[in-house]
Image (tube, rainbow, N blue to C red; front, side, top):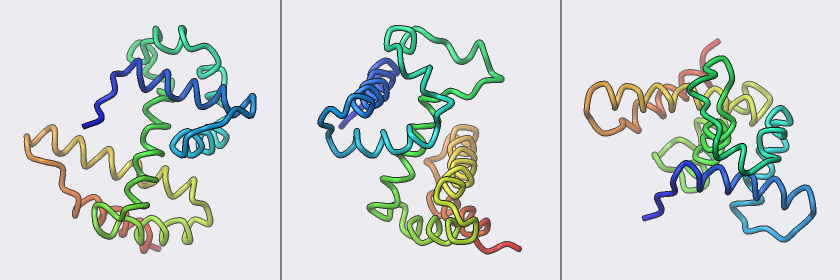
Length: 144
């Protein structure tokens, strides 16, 4: 089971950004990460210095989005859609992207649903409810 530390995740995103900047060869997951990084130029400064990225405590600056959490959620949703797990998430995100005319905006909306599912799971002590998560994304895709 792959279980990276916080520092590992930050190093991964910084390395993907650096490779994209220099045109270095990348693994498939790094290419995907670099595409999401390109969608977020506001994070490029955070990704430019590996040591600073590893040392930074985003809990002390709650007004600033943690770029590593945000990019990790983009990768998670991309992976979920690629394997359609939980079942139905691919179609729900695709419908939401069509409704919003933006895959990026659809991911941001799905992130809210994903975050809510995880928060509910932690609060209740129950496993994450994938069906509720998919239903929440579907509701966003079909509401007026």
